[in-house]
Length: 310
Length: 326
Image (cartoon, rainbow over all chains, first blue to last red; front, side, top):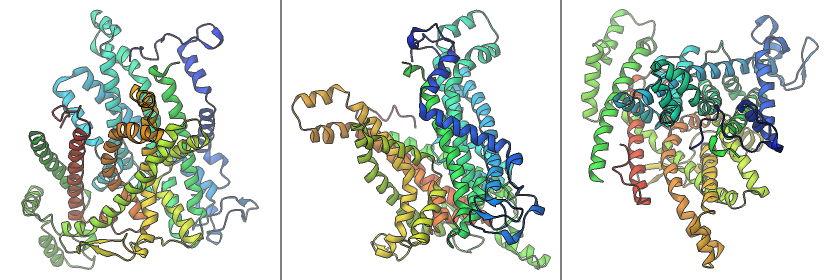
């Protein structure tokens, strides 16, 4: 841990081909694209994000506009002809919805909930972790004990307890995800902050009699961010998976917000009669989302880790 | 050691009490179980009688107090729905969950450690790379969806394995019903156990690989080789024993996670365990069962964490329990 935080200029590794010194950002970009698997993950993630973002524009059908649905079309296998001349490429569900459109809309909801939960948990975790590291003493002990106790229980269990306590609904699911995840950030940022706190630039900032808020937000926080970015990326995937699991169990999002987990749960009852597509394709979409995020996170971890700098 | 265990036990009681208050108050706030339990046709008198019978007319603190004094007598309340002891309901289903979790752990260990060693010893071989790629998939696959796909392939398409229930059970030691001793039971157990094992399998592969990878560079391995020991002995005795410490810790800690995730697997495969009971109880707001489940599971977790800490100090003499934060 001798290297300074990666965002301020770390001693550059002999840049490729002895080129002129790069900015840290350029170095990170260059390191990131050096791994073909990571590029693949990033490309897949980009496609998924575009699909989710523009779902209403590219979906063949608005799956929640009842006027466009026909029960006669329910449970058609993939490739069946649709009445409007198109094709149900991925089949239809029990209400005659085009699965492809339902998946695009589902991605939108799953990713939206995942990102919202991650951002809120990140902010809460940062606040708690930085407070623990900066204030120290009893406050630190209390916060970190809560973190320890919470992290010793599996996430799914805590989320289920909270849903049992709070009841169901989109906001409550997000609240449950935030409660599950803030502890990871708090622990990570506290670890980083304790290391940074002892460094000379922090001492210099204190000697300049800067206000505590300025020290924390302008000096300490930016240098604690790299590990947080990695944790946040992994946690987006974890949040999406957890939300899908809760929704599958019937304790997640309401039916009016059909995330991928709900789509999979919908198909569960038809699976035994061989109608695999209602559960199979949303699952593939979920899997691709999680894998692509994990691939990107894996490479980010290597690129942002000062100890691994070649 | 004794002081450590006593201190930890005292702390555990505090954690348990805190959890019970949180859960009790929280679960109370969910909604009114009366609306679900009493038919809408019942008149006001019937309603009041039922509310009084369930003890729901008393103030919250009084309900908590009667709950606590019940706990002291080993009584965690009666299920609103099943009208039997909540603790009894849970203990009745515990063997099914434990069997599932233990089987999953055995599968993860038996496959994970050899595969991880293989990948660690030949990191650049095709097999090593495929094993690692597979382990990333194991992390990313959502458990419940894998369960569905297993059912789709092995139950629906191939028709080899049954998709739900425990099958035929026999009594182990005359009291504990288990599935793994009968052919029918084993058939029912294979899919859920494999499903539950996947995540831990991936974890053990990565952990063993990382450990083996690191251990091979150490001086003691070079020295063992220089002594002319066979490769088998170097790997089997010197490398394996040194990487076993973190592996055993993770196995211990992950056992709790397995019990937690069994909730999902049990729901997919209709396995009659505690997790399925919890999901059903949340659905019908069967408060005493939810509270009792949580208290039982917290107790199981506290015991597991304590055992792991003790085991850790036995395996690695360099660690002293006074250093481990309770």
